[in-house]
Image: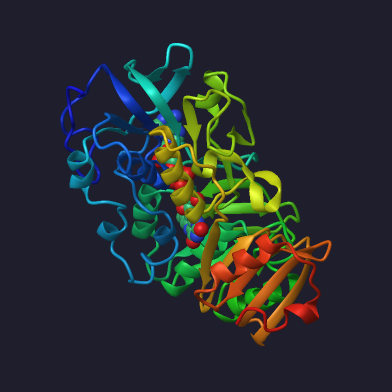
Length: 419
Ligand code: FAD
């Protein structure tokens, strides 16, 4: 058994004090959803093995989706978003080291070093390091107080500023940008969106749907400027001024950027583990070092059902991959064959999607109510690669089956297939 188990509170860094090293059967780097799920995966097979959870954020694991949704709509309170009660970790024999970054992994010595100079030995290690927001590479892109929105601390800080009547510029028209714009609009903040693509969420929505949703945003008072990119950011007193490549100028109290994330691969690289667009893992979620695993947003894995290697930045993937990585670290060694789904809500338009929902593919929309309720199929060479269920619920399993079957289809053969 390990010598210390620290008690922690939801925001606490180690309430039991600092430990300058130690030996653990399992070390998990990253206390997001994948890291938290891995604990459950390990404990499902190994009740006793010592676990260290080490995370750069000074919080116990929490859920990120409410940061742009339910917390803003009064459907959840901050204390509801933690994935487990704080006692869970202590009860489950997990030592936590929060608010501390791992900076180096020596795979030969099986040793992890953190930024305080402490080092820890492991038998199995999980990299569940997620991703970091991409910073705009333009003058002023790193100004203090710009929200590169991702964490609970970002939410708390934004909530303080997003008072009724405040103004906000949202750069980026993808998931994060669109969701936070909707959340602020509902909270009576004057929102202007700026993004380079032709319409909102253009990577997943077919054009007609994307334009329809964009129109809905505009009707609700969100000002939208597509086809444009920020060129510089300045401060004018307390305000931000964003100048675009088209020489337009926008001014607001708050500036939020949702320009995607880059996977956190530095730790893997420090260990000589293969990593580029994510940390490469095999079907068992092992990296190029068999005692080191990776899961969640940072993992680049073989997506069997789509016959491709990819990285998925969604909740269900982090949940399922984290759990399986934990089980496999404890000896299960089952392949990852899950088809992760994802979900989003934009005002009244909610959806769940599975597979390759890439708007560059051929699509067929089987609407029950045009652009409001129905199913969109994404094809490649007449085979369904992805399905988006728009305000159609509890059908993700049907969509998975359809994609897995890999049969040839036409729009006619799909009409009414999923309702
Ligand atoms: P993360 O949650 O990013 O956790 C990684 C953790 O590792 C972080 O705490 C980080 O600080 C820590 N870390 C990184 N490097 C180190 C290091 N070297 N040492 C120590 N710690 C380190 N998905 C959906 O499907 N639907 C949604 O509606 C949805 N909404 C979202 C809303 C927001 C605002 C965000 C940010 C994401 C949303 N997602 C959504 C995506 C989903 O939340 C992520 O896919 C999921 O959180 C990924 O979990 P993870 O554990 O892999 O990574």
